[in-house]
Length: 262
Image (tube, rainbow, N blue to C red; front, side, top):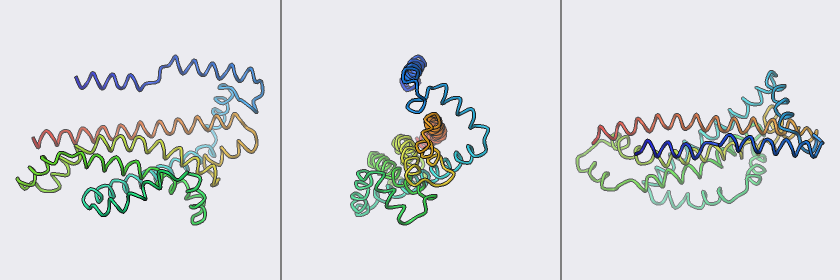
């Protein structure tokens, strides 16, 4: 039963090829109707521009710069979110202290954070900090919800039988929290890419994808704009797929620990 449900969920999440082709055709028709690549470049023009950029070393330097900075910010947000969620679960004052902070981070626009960060740090560090700020509350909230949802009877039973804490952590907490962590990380990595690139467009650090987007706007290179947007989408999807693969392996390990403990 679990396998069939999983397969059905995967089928629902998969993009229908015919729908993608349909909207690409709509885009192509609209570009031909406008008949001005400055206002609307066609899919073929954007793809052609991408083929021109791929062999260039500068293209890969920009990709590596943004990927490295955004993923570093995401990793820091994951570590901070998990650690503070554990502290908030254990100590009530920590939860109350962090409550207004997480609410403020969720409510404040990314542009406001970008301007504030630029007052204190160079633009090259901007996407790291912004990705950290945007990803943290999502991961923190999901992990804390998962910890709160842990069955107290299992914890009490582990204490009665004097199960070492590290075994409780692996066999109970990790198993219970992983689904929530998976959701939080999947949402957070997409938000980190969106906010990180947006921060780069505002701060314009040299050698970043955000700089390329800004230049395409300044010089009215619409094909470059669509090209770099496609690159961002592909990188975001690729990072999310890799993350899900790693989490799946972690879930299998946690499930094996759970079976052994029972």
